[in-house]
Every structure is written in C-alpha cells, then in structure tokens.
Image 1: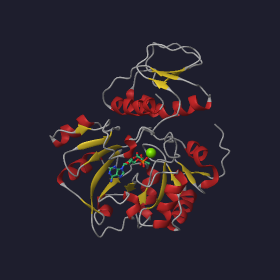
Image 2: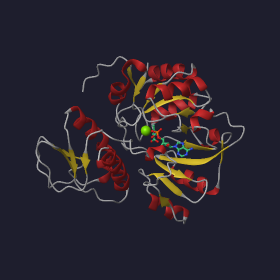
Image 3: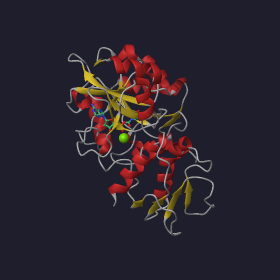
Image 4: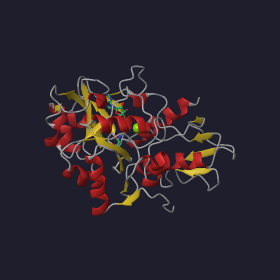
Amino acid sequence: MKNIYLNIFRFNNNSISKAINVLRKNSIVGLPTETVYGLAGNAYSKKSINKIYSTKGRPKKNPLIVHYLNINNAKEDVKFNKDFFILYKKFCPGPITFILKKKRNSKIQPKVTSGLKTVAIRFPKHKVMKTILKKLNFPLAIPSANQSSGISPVTAIDVAEEFAEKIKIIVDGGKSKIGIESTVIDLTGKLKILRPGAISASEISKILKKKVKIITRSKLIKAPGMLKKHYSPNIPMKLNQKNSPKNHAFIVFGKEFKKNQNIFNLSKKSSLNEAASNLYKIFRKIKKLKYKKINVVRIPNKDIGIAINDRLKHAEEKRR
Ligand code: TXA
Ligand code: MG
C-alpha cells in the first residue's frame, strides 16, 4: 500500500534522531517491535505517560509495560528473582514480559503501573527499539499502538490509521515479525501466564522445571488484556466452524480451502507462526471490507496456536 502519511519515517539515522528528540521532550512516538507496533513514551515522565493514556483512550487502571535495553538498565526499578534470571538468559531480548515487584525508590511513574506494587518489564529485540533504547537514559513505557480495545498494529500504516496526526513520528521498521503481543508471565508468586504469546507455557515450564498456570479466563482481571474488549475487530465472530456462507468472512488455516473472495487464509502451509503474523492483518482487512459476520475454522491449540486461540476467544466473546 502507498504511504500517504506524512508522519511515517523510514528507519534510518535521521528518523532515529527525530524520534529520540521527541522522546526526550516527553512526548510520544510510534515504534516497531518484533511483536506489534507500540506507542512509546518516557516511563519516568508524568507528561508522557498522561499522553499515552489520553491518546489511546486507555482506562487508567490498565497498566503499561516498561521496555529496557537490558537487565542492567532495569535493576534500579525492579526486584529480580531466580526464575527471572533463567528466563532472561534464555529468551531476552524477545517477546516475553515479566511481572516483578517494583523497587520502592524506582523512578517509574506510578501511573505506568496503575498504582500497583508490581511492574511489567520487557526487553524488545527489534533493531529500531534497541537502537533507540541504547541512546536514552530512561526506559520506555510502550502499549500497543492502537485505540484502546482495538486491534494491535503490525505495520507503520496501521499505526497511522489508528491515530492520524495525533502522533508526530512513526518509525517504519517493517512488518512486525511475530504479529501478536508478548507472553506476559507473573513471577511474583506461583508462576502464572497472564497473556499467552510466542513463548509458550510449556517451553517456560520445561526451562524452569516448574508448573506454569495459564489464566486466561479468570474473572480476577489482573492483566486487563483479559478484559473481553481486547484484540477484537468488533464484528460478531464464531469459532471452530467447518464452513461459512459466502456473505460472511471466513478465516481459515491450511491448504484444503479454495480461494474465494470471502476466504482469508492465515497460513496455506499450516504454519502456526505464519498464522500468528497474519492474524491482525486479516482482522483489519475484514473490518475494512465491512463484513457483518466472521466465521473461523478450528486452529490447532499448541505452541503459538494457544495465543492465537486466546485472541480469537476474546474477539468472539466481545460480540457474542
Ligand atoms: O508485545 C507487547 O507486549 C507489546 C509491545 C508494544 O511491546 N505491548 C503490549 O502492551 O502489548 P499493552 O499495553 O497493549 O499490553 C500490556 C499488558 C496488558 O494486558 C496489561 O494489563 C498487562 O500487560 N500488565 C502491565 N502491567 C501489569 C502488571 N503490573 N500486572 C499485571 N499485568 C500487567
Ligand atoms: Mg494492547
């Protein structure tokens, strides 16, 4: 698609220094990560955090993830533990977010954590993120760059479509490779996955040699990503369907589905990773085409398929 947005800048030295200037002034920028695009601001600045919440229309009680270059930069803000060190070594930088206890003298703005004593931290892998974090002397609070309760963006154009001129700079770092948000794991007590992602509970469990619980349906909304409103195209959706009428969008997986106008294939070669990276792109496409109903085939519930099914269930429940 042609870029008609004047606030999108290709990743180069020039766009990086522009973004850094804006961040140092405690304003906000759109940045790519390996999971989804985010809306970034100084995690130590009240002004930038207020801007993030108001630009997204995000409820104040939904806390943000703080992004760091590496473990060294995070040590003043959070209390590490054994499990964290093991997972950090294995998966970071990468698509995993850790909930840990916040240090009392941490400079993180209380609004970032919605007043909680815990904080979510992540070490992103994307080159743009690493380049920018290296040059800053503060970490970045970065929620996904979509209007609250909408579909997470996976390209710079998606971000521009969400916010128009409300943000001055969006750095274009290509399509987000993974395509769905990071795994969120609570390390403050018994291990709990609050949001499934590319790194699965079974991988984590194997490495830590401990049981890991996945709490996606909990009524106790500890990660408000669990609110039914999330990750949704806001169109009635039915899961586990074998077929679909032609006037409804049909999201499929695998080569047995013939090409048709209403058919959107997550992965012809039945790759769950490819399906994850196509999911939000397809949600957006279906929304633009103004379909009134969506049917979805069964997606294998293993590896990143667990995260795909989690997002689909949220989208289904919202409009049931
Ligand atoms: O992949 C990602 O994590 C992306 C990219 C941009 O890094 N970010 C992202 O942020 O998905 P956001 O704000 O859309 O989702 C953050 C999730 C929310 O479900 C939030 O409730 C949860 O993390 N969270 C943040 N702090 C928390 C805390 N202290 N305790 C429990 N959950 C927390
Ligand atoms: Mg989000």
